[in-house]
Length: 243
Image 1 (cartoon, rainbow, N blue to C red):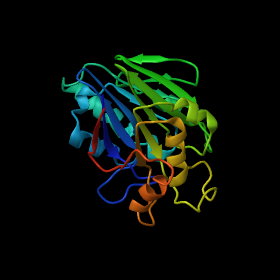
Image 2: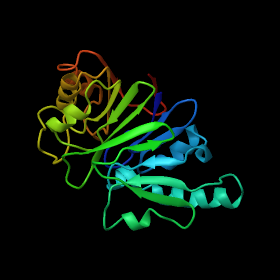
Image 3: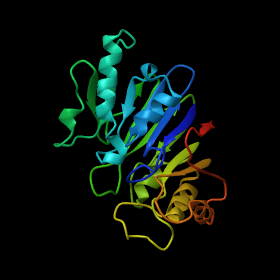
């Protein structure tokens, strides 16, 4: 199982980049985690979009889902010219403002989840945990062939997230804030908290992402490393992590 970074900024994309978007893959299939601002352009740069049939949205903030809308037109056009045969499945939490917009004719299909169900998505066993954010937001755990990846989405600290992430091979963790900024932006983690989460959950690797638009990004890794002594990776476009 592999993880590829497509976009990694929080809030909005910097020039020629994208917000949250990640591809989990093996030899048989792929799942996309989030598809935020600018992500569709980058996704089509690095992946055959017609081979992607399943997208999981962690929550309905624009930097995590908004490129679903141009993707719907992509699916329509690709079906109309015979390059795509099936709709794209979009897994989302329920939101009264957005859920109904995830279905688009025969081109995208919305499948709603919550903390309970376990989904088998082409052999990827996928579960969800509601996190500590300003709107309903979910962490995602994906397991296959003895390997596991946990994606925090957007969240502040929670002990439940430690348990949910236990012994993961890779933790994709937001690091929206530098140490010393705890609580200044509601519903987000500092880099040090990301390191603590990885350490307490005993994960094998930590991928820091959802970066702020200020400060020295490399400092996030240094701050996380105070608490987590295993491998820490800073997200970057087209970075692939093999498990």
